[in-house]
Image (cartoon, rainbow, N blue to C red; front, side):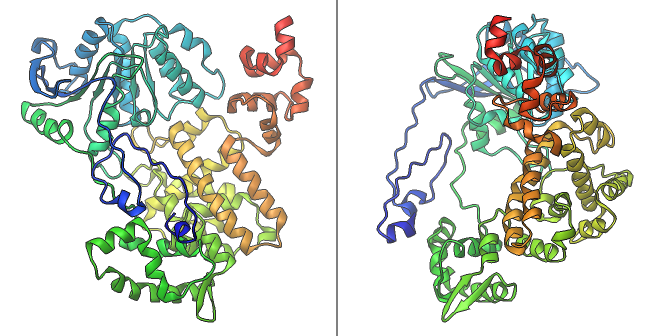
Length: 576
């Protein structure tokens, strides 16, 4: 935008955020007016509830208060040791009895499912019949049966282990006043941009339990709390964080309820300078090496760094000089007089989602390929070597060497030579096995293997290395995202191999839909179907839109159900 203004162009830009802290001069960097409003159409009460039933909160009028929200005698230990269930059950019973719709956030998929299950048993609610009636019936996940049990008791959970059609049915049913879902338990994916009719939101944990084990930021908490009391649904909303002790209650109240969202910061760190520079150079035709630090200052990261340290540009000049030499040696840049500009390969790398180091790694590996003799599916395994793919969470059993079988799984699908590539740049055996696990899983995913089979095949134990549908989709989507970048780079490396590049286009589509090549024409039918419906049609011998048209109404209903059949054949269905 800043460079556009230098060329006399005035782009129109609107930046929106519901939860934001100190702008850190972000508005001054863009030279944009700031419009800030703290008005909330529906008042929100925020507070913390401890195991004694004491609720410390900020009321709608801004005053801090303390009250007994739950009778202490109702909070009893329900399992072998104290847990959030002891408070969630009586709290849900009380709120649902008062006619409230409850949204409970859990920080992991397993606890979300478990919470919805014990609540449907404890609450004794009627079934969410309308939601049950529209759930998909094919290619179900291991979580699908749990969902149906919960819906039969008026509760539901929402996480990435559910099919998209299941999540959409839950969201619609929860928003519907007569949908029959009184309590929805969700992971944090539901906190972003989904309008819900929840009158009360409960946060059962105040930290992520993942690879980094970090606490929620204040902004993340405010986002989740803000799901309560939405305009058009409620007159007031309430957000409740659960705490064990009065001391923890006071700490969480201070940190989150009274907390201010974090400052706006650039995502780039000094260690990202090579990636940062490569992406900038991909946006210009040519530039003198001495001008590159000035370009960096135009970015928000450079603007912030130079404001914090006036000597920043001088320090960066040394790193930029060394970086330009690396670009020239790697064939990503070339000199034209006193100008430096990226080669076609450099531009492909700079326009990609990959870091500078990952781009170099991919180029090195791909140059060793004989594209004319390489199956496009091999690239699925190759991209698992990238840092960006290693960063995608892959459940691996960390005790013993039981995951070592994944090397054999990958070798069977891609061949033994690929194992050498998957071992490149590995930090340890577990990282190698994780790469093999992803590669083998993806191979089976695009061959149309049912989801429940994939979950069982690639789960080591239910408690360690367990693969759920959310992991499958996360790995497939991550691979597809970075494979697009690899495709751009490969198009530059192998311009004389159109069939190989066309095969990569097909792999990208197969990753998106989870379909074998023979079933891929089905995505052209005028109605978006589920993976299970596409596979059912393919198994019925109708692997093309023409084949679908040739099926009898009865056979089509067997494959895709009555609702999809009505959309595919509206005239026939309306007269039958």
